[in-house]
Image (cartoon, helix red, strand yellow):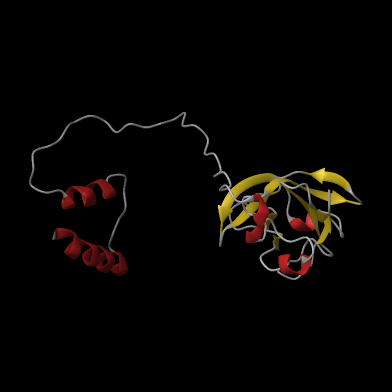
Amino acid sequence: MRRFFAIPLLVFVAGCGTLTVDDGFWQRIEDAFKHDTPAQTNKPPVVVTNAPPVVPPVQPPADPAAEPNPARPQDQKTGFLWKPSAEGGGDLVVLCPPAFTGHIKAWRLEVDGRAIETGTGAGVFNGGRYHIRYSQKGGEYPPGVTFALVTDAGRVWRWKIPNPASRYDGQIVPTVTLP
């Protein structure tokens, strides 16, 4: 019950400009919310300094027969996003159309058919779209750079980016090379 009164009071006091936040401020707020129960322990909190790195989620398994139809590449422009500067890191991120999720074997950036960078898979987010992050902002890649994606069936889908510094959201029809 105390929490319902403390939060508005905290907001009111903070709005008045009379609140001073020091090292013990948040501890005093937590202490105000504790119930009248005996202390649990006096042990210091556990701090993990060598935590393992966060591993991006693996693509969910999918039916190979459900891969995008190579006879209809125009269907795969929707959902493709070339984002030259991502919010999280500021560098290029590519979001693959959701139809490819679960079917992606490899990806890379190409210039004239030659690989220039592979990027790092970051997982599936934003409407079931697989995200791939790169080491530079989009505008640092040459005009006409191509994002190439290889499916489990060996098909190579390519989205050619006219101006890598611009955002392309569902505007580019890919080309498909069959195995």
